Length: 194
Image 1 (cartoon, rainbow, N blue to C red):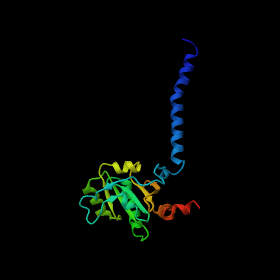
Image 2 (tube, one colour; image 1 turned 30 degrees about the horizontal axis):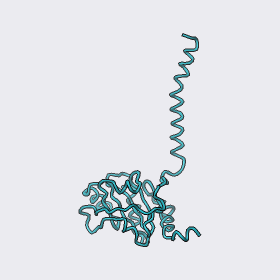
Image 3 (spheres, rainbow, N blue to C red; image 1 turned 90 degrees about the horizontal axis):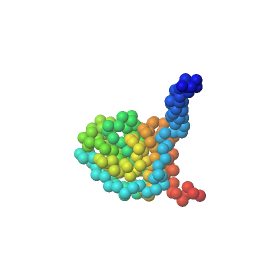
Image 4 (cartoon, rainbow, N blue to C red; image 1 turned 90 degrees about the vertical axis):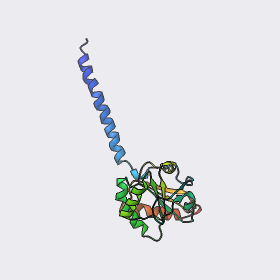
């Protein structure tokens, strides 16, 4: 055994520590670099995927949701939510506040939820939605590029996805993010390029 062996083992023991430190530094930077709610979507400025979702079973006087419902000539906020989602519960009062506005059309995509749980959630917290589609398998959410719930999309009046917000909407986000993006979706694309 050479005299260098103990020193080599000492330095060899530092390799895992150095790797851990590098990974910790990358994680730290990832947490504070940019806004996690601004995860890009491949569907931005593209038509909503074709879909037809039935209403949540037993949710009284509430229609389901289809891609054609998003081509009304006016922009729509599409919120992806579930009763089992803790952040959705936190976000819900903000959605109720948005629903009080006359200039906002808000619909829901209920993601992989049992109908009785979705009904109980809306019955307890209030129903801000004008329509709720039941995405029991999660297929529609996958087609929309949903990473998790809650996520919110703004779709213009022609059925084009203009904005995606990941995570729960905070009260300040209404004025600072959602309403400006909604207003931008009201502006015809031809005017935006002038």
